[in-house]
Image (cartoon, rainbow, N blue to C red):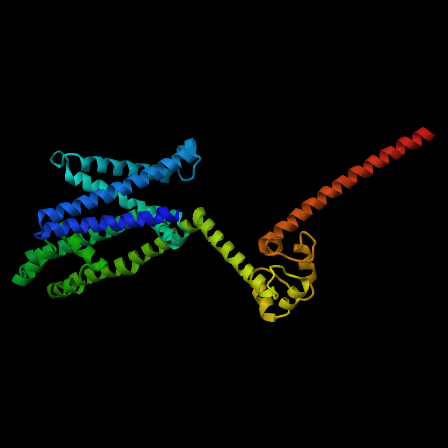
Length: 391
């Protein structure tokens, strides 16, 4: 995954460089020979990336075989996306190698942009991008909320646009009328329904300062300014804040339901826990022979700081139970602990693993109890048969 992720990033950089080069060639007066050399280099890099990703897809298909397109495959959707991207890249390479007079160049460039979707693979394959994965997943899960939020905001803008246009129309046709500058303002900002909605939308999304609209409306009529100010209050303080809350809630729920993200977090936490235990083992191993004796472990546990650190790792160890811990994790019984025994043993007695061990011990105890009952009944039956025979 790391190698493929690096190649995907490199491909993305090359696409950006190629696009930048094409625009510079168009805007500058470069020689046709230099432009041709750059174009040849660009096509060569494009073919190399296409070959690499095609080979990677074929190897995955060979390894997974029918499971590659099985509905039981949790990566089925990503496999479909990868297949479509590779197919688009191959099509682009074939079209670019043909006579360019017979090929629609815009179509080739659009197919090239499809390759940028590969960047999303980094989100799902590399643990480094777990936070980015959560953000992307939150955005995707909020698309339905975004649609309804846009609909509500659009409806609010439409209603206020109609009200303001009707009020301004009354002012235009009144006996007093409006000045030339005011008429220009109305024609510029509220000349049509679409224009009015566009202006109101910009006022609440940062496209323009809403004071530029409020001041002329105040000069025309205080009622117009009150209506416009109420729109700003409802849209900014009401609708947009509620929309932000809905988005945050949807994103949070999606992250909690994202099993892959939770698995990555669990794996990262597990690796960190094992690294901390390995560090504790090295600190306790005073003679540095790779083996930990009971005396070394007792000396190490004697520090209050060490006990606090182990407690943070889920190991409640002190001077009273250190002997029990040592013998519990000394699986081969040689009186020495290897780093493997130490880590595996701590995994059995720490946190959730300890609870699992207790549950397994309880199940084993019940099984032994049932066997004892069966033996007792069997012995009772044998005793009855013996007594009957003697009688």
